Image 1 (cartoon, helix red, strand yellow):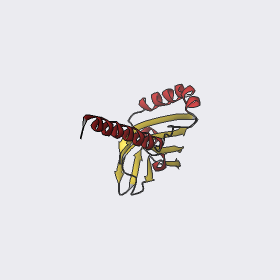
Image 2 (image 1 turned 180 degrees about the vertical axis):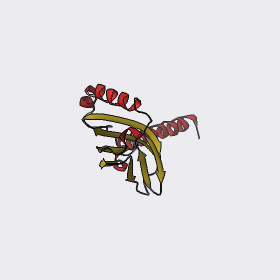
Image 3 (image 1 turned 45 degrees about the horizontal axis):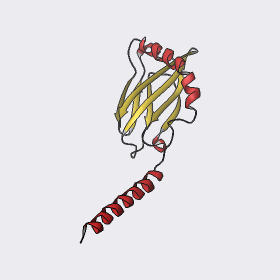
Image 4 (image 1 turned 60 degrees about the vertical axis):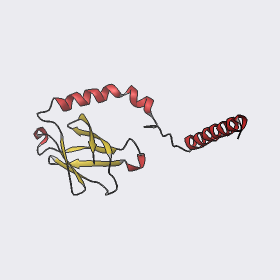
Length: 143
């Protein structure tokens, strides 16, 4: 085999590699984190204020996972008070794994069922309201 044939083989392998990478990259999904990211960015100061309200509470929001249930415990500040809001388990790698639940609770605990196939890294986004005051809690968790 002469050197001209070897150069042709290397060149052909390079071209085939580039074509393969272009094909694979065009078949990848490129979903945005959220469809209305710009409007959410403008309202982010409200989230900062809501997070400050949560940090001013007597204790942080606590969570535990038992028997495919995510159990959220609100601080004692809300004992016996009616809370309403939304809990979102956001999966950054796959939006089909996101879990959203609206809730109204009278005690300090909220239980969210978790599907058995929902393992991985998540972000817990918890919004709730009491007496017209809104609160926001965010935590990275692993299920």
